[in-house]
Image 1 (cartoon, rainbow, N blue to C red):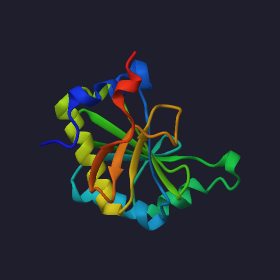
Image 2 (image 1 turned 135 degrees about the horizontal axis):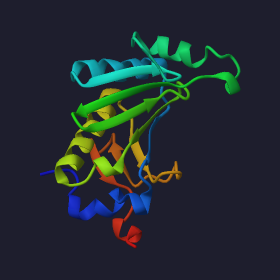
Image 3 (image 1 turned 120 degrees about the vertical axis):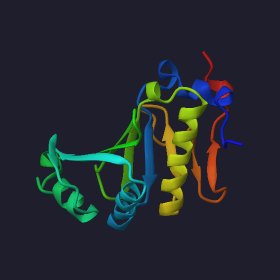
Image 4 (image 1 turned 90 degrees about the vertical axis):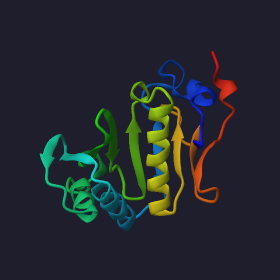
Length: 169
């Protein structure tokens, strides 16, 4: 049985309610955690593309990503390396290295409609959470720190963190 049932959580995946691009984060990370993520992407044979400041580049290592992120020196001049990952053909997840201390990524709720897509996302969160041994939290767009759901390390599964009925319009 799936961790989450679509009919129970579909309001959390409504772009009109939560925004199209919820904030997803793994906090308290290091360069080594980013490397675990890169290794996971490669081990799963997910299609991916890497770029720095919009320019396609070869993905070498997490240390290389961190070096690219800090190449500009001051925070105002820094670029944001991004890693685009497709766990399935038409579901894009974009990781952005704003800082080494958190793994931030975007999913598009318009691509996550129905039980099948929800199951893909839940599996994705579980793979990352288990691989890192850390929580993966998804908050409404523009509301970081107020997660709706996420991978709970202690429960070893994706759990609800809000009552979906409180979001119904």
